Length: 124
Ligand code: 5GP
Image (cartoon, rainbow, N blue to C red; front, side):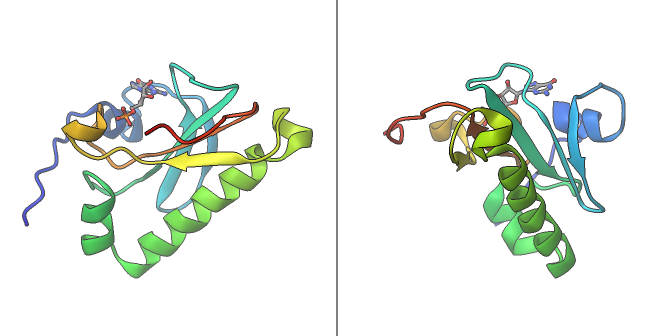
């Protein structure tokens, strides 16, 4: 299946430095920054620097180095933010929306990390 990437999406513009972001963590292939409209006391987005629309695109076409880097970056940010002494809560939730049914707003792969409060059960 071909994946069409829109290089004018907002996260591509953040990666190019055209729009500012509140950076939390950066690696060779990944960037983490605070969500502009937080849904929890901790709400960080982690994105790969490569041009991938969603998780299945990324897993099919990214290099092993990108996949390892991104996976580690997500884990690192979760560990940094998900612990009680830092975020005011215990634990975190990782979520990635893909496509219209999941209400994906920005067509560049992003993983949400929520925490800092009791999050309750998963949204159905
Ligand atoms: P989605 O619905 O695609 O999973 O989530 C997109 C997220 O990106 C939303 O939570 C939204 O608040 C966030 N967002 C949209 N535009 C910007 C922006 O310019 N900067 C930052 N930091 N977050 C953004």
